[in-house]
Image (cartoon, rainbow, N blue to C red; front, side):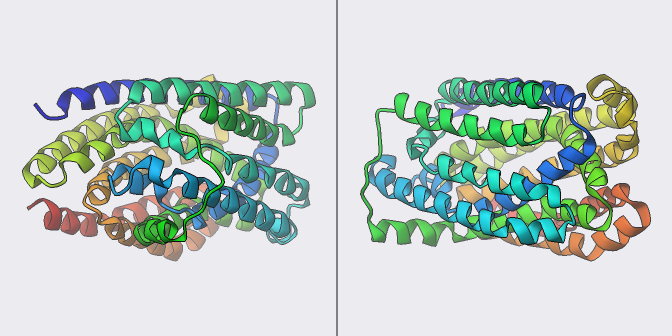
Amino acid sequence: MGYLKESIKGVGWMGALRTVTRLLAFAKIAILARILVPEQFGLFGIASLILAFLEILTATGINVFFIQGEGKIKDYLNTAWIVSIARGCVISLVVFLASTPVAYFFKAPGTLNLIRLIAVVPIIRGFVNPAVISYRKRLLFNKEFYFRSLLFLIESLFTVGFVLITRNVSSLVAGMIAGGFFEVILSFALFTERPRLSFEIEKVKKVIKRGKWVTMAGIFNYLFENGDDAVVGRLLNTGALGYYQVAYKISTLPISEVRQTVVKVAFPVYSRISGDKERLKKAYIKTLLTISVFATILGLFIFFFAGNVVLILLGSNWLRIVPVLKVLSIFGILKAIITSSYPVFNSVKKQEYVAYATFVNLVIMALTIIPFVKNYGIVGAGYSAIIGTAASLPFILIYLARILR
């Protein structure tokens, strides 16, 4: 009978998860945008950039390793946990040490203490029980829904509460810290498989060998998704960065949620049928059509009603982002369609294809981002993102042909 029934259920549960979390995210942004100013969002964006980069830089690929079926979770649980803790500590130290040069680079002394505070987050996250990936590996998407929804709700409530009390941008980081604490607690309370302080170097080597391409793809994708932020913040100012980041979130969130919902279900399902190329091809085509239809509908809605969306969500003070919002909505459609192929590559253990494609995205954007921002401001950053994304399409088609023919 195959995995059609499980896939439909999975998409339903993951769709519900993404809907709940994004509605909460929109509500949170709508509240915070009326309390904090764009410059404060820009400061938080700078602090987030350095943290996100280091998390990507030190990614082990353990989740992809588990979902591909190369190792039982219980056999690698202890090793994965120790590596996660060590990774969190290293990231925290580097973030703290980088606070001064990062603040100097962006000419934003207000980010100094914010970056040092955000350095606490990876230490806490490092203690999360790696068994949380078992929900997705075993296609238990209903449990994944309850677990992730609860965590996002907790973090959102704490963040909004802190901001209402302090009216300070550091409250955004305080909410992340609170969410991290609760994730650690729930990861041990809800899972019977609990790690211990045990380390096996051979298992680490095996995971790293398979995960190196995942790490490289993550680095390239991070630089692509955040390079425009760095250029905007450097060439323009923190206010422009705040405008751009909020526009990016609003324009791409609905579209990326559709893609992420389907992709999170597709990857474990693809991995189970990867040995049958005909089934894999049919499953991919269905997934591609689903993502394309919904991404196009949502993207065009944002494009044609950008002004109304901004007024409803953010208020009249943010109408300046309408032009870039329209550009980024097109970028969101294009990215959703192109990246829907990535789970296919991962399922057949061709993570290098994802790395190559994201590298092309990065190179083309790097060549265009500075002149575009200098000439067109934050709208130019959106143009550069579109061109960079489209550049990888020929390579994606070639890789798909190699796998599915």
